[in-house]
Image (cartoon, rainbow, N blue to C red; front, side, top):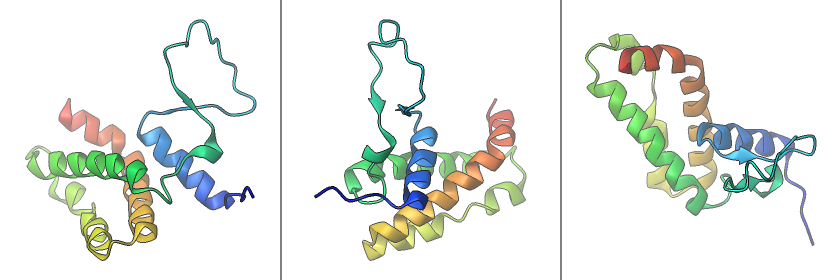
Length: 124
């Protein structure tokens, strides 16, 4: 029996997939499969960040790398990297609670998307 994914989870999985630069195949997508034959495409309903550590761990690695770069970059304003609450992610991992880790990652990705331009300017 196939279960339907909650729309909020689906939306957040797509948010993470975009953060991870995955190619999402929506019903109305225009794909040139001859040109894009080397690309891997994912259906939104097949994204498993919310329920699989195998999917979520690479995202955690990317979040940690960004957090670390922010902390090591002395050119970034202190208030910029102090806004990143990586402790929520760490605590959720310690609890081994994938739902909480997923939600913490969503907050991190939203923060990153809002600050991406400034982050990239300082990391030039």
